[in-house]
Amino acid sequence: MREFTREYRRVPFAAGARVYSSSYEQEGTIANLSLGGCFFTTSTPSRAGEYLHFSFYTSGMVLRGAGIVRHVLPESGMGIEFTDITRQFRAAISFLVSPRQ
Image (cartoon, rainbow, N blue to C red; front, side):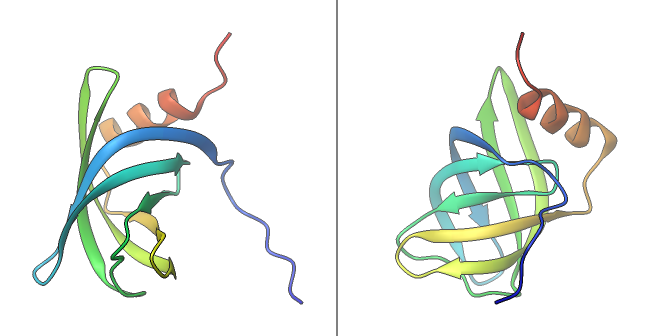
């Protein structure tokens, strides 16, 4: 079995979110978050390889971005890798995943 090392540390997270593409729209919850992506919980995940847009609200901010579905857990959710993100989005995610004092 191949050992997998993540580039970014994931942190538990809870925020209502919406993902959508030309053929898919779903509301769910972001269960964990990192600088590289998130896990979106839903009973009807999209397919791996699909490009999506997403939005979620947390800490007084509305965050919007784009990503690609990298893995799917049937009836549980999907891992989304962030793509095409702005500096402001990256700064907000960095704040959200940073250890709190």
